[in-house]
Length: 127
Image (tube, rainbow, N blue to C red; front, side, top):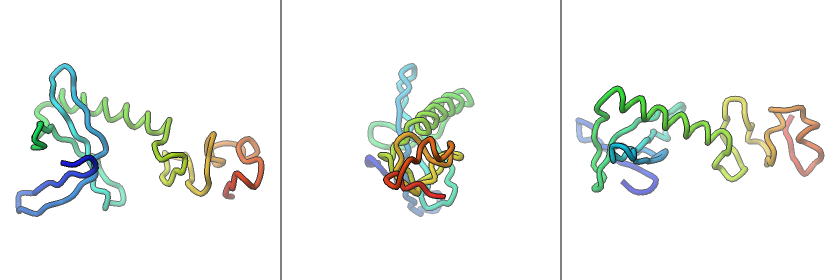
């Protein structure tokens, strides 16, 4: 497992590469988790596994563990929507958020009245 990708070998020996969304360690249990997805899918689902220091993956063991992972994932997603990590050049939709067609500072012109955000040609807002 490198910093951006993870390769998983399925039961047939086929390797598949996934993109790592994020990792975290639960301070109470000391277990480390990786959340990852297939970037080739149009609407990728997020998968999760426990991993050890050598990068070996293990299944999630209990419903309580899944609940904890779900809470961490929800927190991550809400932070991502509040402060997009794409450097102000958003190319994805945060459920009605930026259209990705222009540079944005305060937000997308589609989220507000265009006159509030788009006040000139330098804003390059789309119609």
